[in-house]
View 1 (tube, helix red, strand yellow):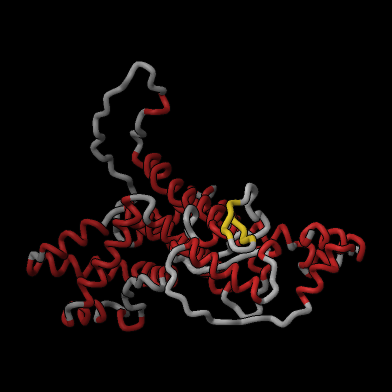
View 2: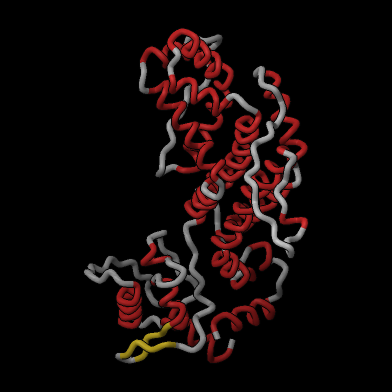
Length: 357
């Protein structure tokens, strides 16, 4: 494999080091220098780094000033920290795939006011019933209430799984919740119950239940598979590609989503129609394009401003957050079992020389 290959072989035959190093350094540059020194002390060449992975803390994984960016743009030479003209393009940063997938759904939820409001309403519904033993019992005593899912609390640490459970439970208990809220409103004129029912008793909310259940279920399934002990790097790449494909397919399934929402609305006694909202008047300029005008059809406005935007943010975040993983996959694809079976020894040797030289 040539001189370069023999040089890399001398490194791979060394022991594998696992170590904890105590430090009071808290800057990205200082931590990068610490890592560089540790590698050098153990005879490992920083230039042979082919990947790096850290948690989501900004000092480690920050796009601008994080340690991963610092290591990619500098190199350690003797006793000085110098700027390198060309970054280590062969050392892309790879985040924990499952955690990163949680952040994708989090970004999608916060992309629109409607998304923030939707999960806020779910949280309010849990608090309204969960903080009162009488209301919780009344909800449980509805038709087959004891056999149905209980309302779930949203957790910040288990973003996808907790929200998937919460959306499923809300969908399962939706009709019961509206019945109990109506009963409370009629008997006590409770203001919180009135506000909660107003937020939930419409097609817009039903649409968000359908959309978010599909998105969260799809991504949670992939997230769970990514955490399996038998999932290797090539499998994770395929799973993430499948998740991207499912979101793209969903983006083209507006009619299916709308049909499901209409059917569920009718079964719950809700009018399956989008209500027109008052449009804020905006001054038009002489060079304004016709496409700049606001959509007046409420269904079309929801489709563009909520449905498409939500999924497009998720798709975009999948691309951005897993860019490093995709780079590593492309770099080492020749080592994937299915690829190695198709390559000759000479072709594998050429691929290896291309990486380590």
